[in-house]
Length: 259
View 1: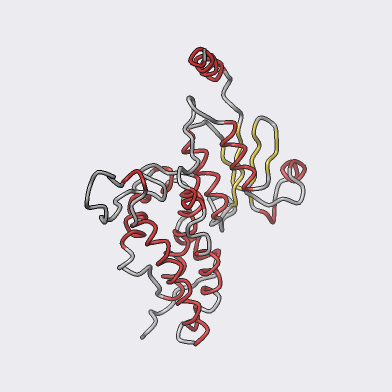
View 2: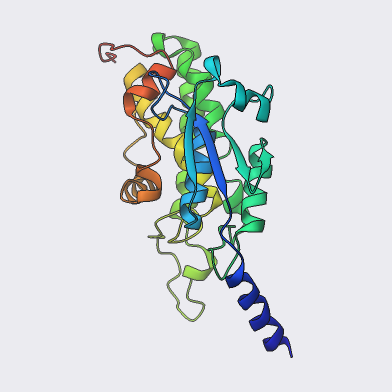
């Protein structure tokens, strides 16, 4: 009986008309290109991974058209219009899309492992504090903030290198190997990657341009992770240009920092 119910639900899902989805993201420096906004890219990646058809519109918050201002008054991009319903809160947008676009027609993007959902969540805050003092990287404050950023990156790297439960062979005596998975929760992108990758991209671009800071080479888990992301259309096609990242952070060309 349960199999029959499951088949009926699948048939009903397959007959549902495709949703009408419009995504509005932050515009860049020319008011038309995709701007640097990790939240905009987060939703962009989620919809792309779902494999659903949707429209993308860049919105300059300073000159938001009146019709959009009426739709989402007082709201800056990103926001979604899903079958006529306006969604402005990022976590709620994520939950709504995951709930409405479900298997068998659309992949599930939720993480399998609880820790994958929150690992690395402090990295962007540490970067945001560091970048404010990046013009004087040799100051004590800048050094302290850089150390905190590196410590957070180290913890994230350790998680990426640690084998997850499904990678461990319980019958093997050697379970001390290093994970080779591509993304945070496995070999497929999840909601966690949609949150983390846009932020890591900003860090590697802005920190390099502003302070000649690079993610340490010994963090091989992070570099493997970014290499995998750079090969994924869902990530590279939704990224802002490097110059847009620098424009957002008001970064001009600087001479390399001497140590």
